Image (cartoon, rainbow, N blue to C red; front, side, top):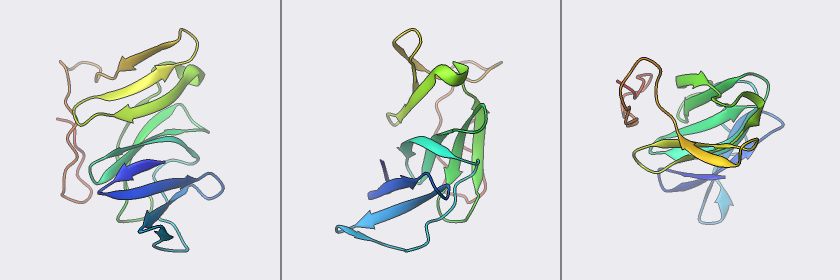
Length: 127
């Protein structure tokens, strides 16, 4: 579960989509499909969702207005030991369940990255 644009987003492991709940009721019986194949561990980031992909070594940022809208992605920093994901408005964080720590994500080859979701559809946030 995650908060996305003031709505509660609930991941559906069976279909790879996310259901939105407003005022205690689902907004659609058919959830938008996120980028990636099998979503786990959601984190809302403005109008997007960061999530771990259960079938690949990817950490994925998906838009929620269109099906399969991948805005950004990266490798899971701790491979199969990457378990949780959170976004605090400035930094993207993940859990390392092997060494029992939480770490902020930085892009390779770049100085500290502050990921800010773009309102432009199909545009990635990091610079």
